[in-house]
Length: 64
Image (cartoon, rainbow, N blue to C red):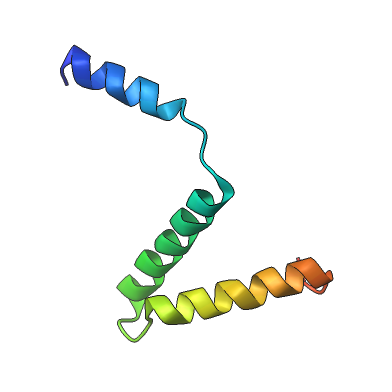
């Protein structure tokens, strides 16, 4: 890996993520892992479940 690339990676790692970016990454990760195991899983399904979970968390009804 070149020094320039190492420097860019180091700089990028210090950029703070917004909550929206973090949620987008979380959903993408969930989709990638579940779709790999079951091709019937869609991004829309992951988004729907994420919205349901967010609603439950905001209502204090999540079972964690």
